[in-house]
Amino acid sequence: MYTSDTICAISTPSGRGGIAVARVSGPDAIEIANRLWRGRALTEALTHTAHLGTVVDPATDAPLDQAVATVFRSPRSFTGENIVEIAVHGSTYIQQQLITLLCRAGARVAEPGEFTRRAFLNQRLDLAEAEAVADIIASSSRAAHRLAISQLQGHFSAHIDRLRNQLIDLAALLELELDFSEEDVEFADRSRLLALAESIRTTLRQLADTFHSGHAITQGIPVAIIGRPNAGKSSLLNALLHTDRAIVSDIPGTTRDTVEDTIDIDGITFRFIDTAGIHHTADPIEQMGIERALQRVSNASIIIWLTTPDEADLPALPATIAEHLSTHTHLILALNKADLAADAAAVLAQQAQSASAARHQIAISAKTGTGLDQLRQTIAQLATADLPADESMIVTNARHHQALMAAADALTALIDGMPTLTTDLLAFHLREAIDHMAAITGSITSDTILTTIFSRFCIGK
Picture 1 (cartoon, rainbow, N blue to C red):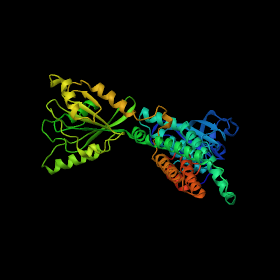
Picture 2: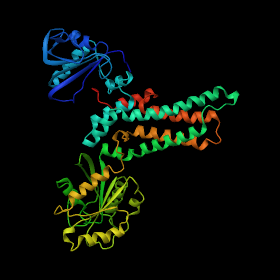
Picture 3: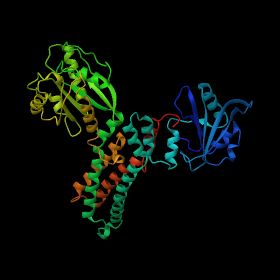
Picture 4: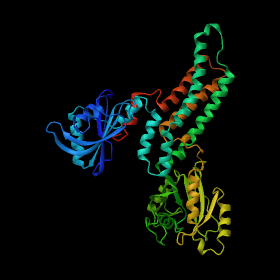
């Protein structure tokens, strides 16, 4: 990808709006923008200053729009290059003409993510921080935005670099041993190397373990509602969403496929999934719905097991669900239609004995709203129960998770082989771990990976 020419693009969302901003970046950005500018000369403007003027067609001097141009001089800009941002009225015609004029003046249209890629290549951002820019743009909830901001601030990258530098120090000593192999000397203390490798491996695995919850927060945490037919699953979904999203009927088997919708609770997006009633049936269509429900439930982070007062003895949790219960899956036993029970607390306590895997039990009524606030509060608490207090140490990126696991595996090979492996093999596994960690921040990476990452950005970013 070219890095020495000047690029331009509309950085605001496509379509008509009150305002649109065109970004120009590159060595000739200020001169190119000045060619179609009437007002104070942008070539004489100080960095980080905004100026009112008019955008014109240099060929005819015909005005296009009154505008505000903001100048950022290298290296104190987002990309590290000269940048001019031109704010015009949000007419689609004006936007198209502005980009056309900039290209005629010497710029070219930017590729997707090229502005952020230049920021990375010019060391204004590391790779993890650059990916956080995309996460900020894509964030759809307060929680997702907060995690992206913490990544952009660079604390996660700094933590990874500190761990990597510790390994680099020992790797250098191992390499020195290889240089003096004929002397039979040992510069790298093996007990220190083992202790450090075990400590860093533990840290890497702890970071990787946050990915399940961290990724779910950015995408919407899946919450599955399960239970027998007519337990009130669809009614509960509608009550939580405050809308008639699912069909409610007294006829068993009304819900034959999963029904989904999202809701924001305490700044976190949840994807609620209403499933078909789980029971034995001879109806092949209904059975397909049940099988599909079990598949969706197996990927849920939170499961609401909905019961009713007439279920004195709960059936065993379906094996397909039970086998997927882990530290990442939370099970809530919710007694629906509690308003119809003479003693809802006693019924719930009795059912809880059969549902020992459900650590949380709540009596609710989807019809009257009783207990729904407590249910929402419990769901919100469980969403962040597995996450560390330091939000900058939460992994939300699948590439980072893969690199962390690969680095941990390389350290495992080093630890397991410590008693018998030769110095060159120990050094190999250590370098492998260092390279995987470096790939997170982009200290070591390939052009293919960079192209893949930045191609996912919008053109103006």
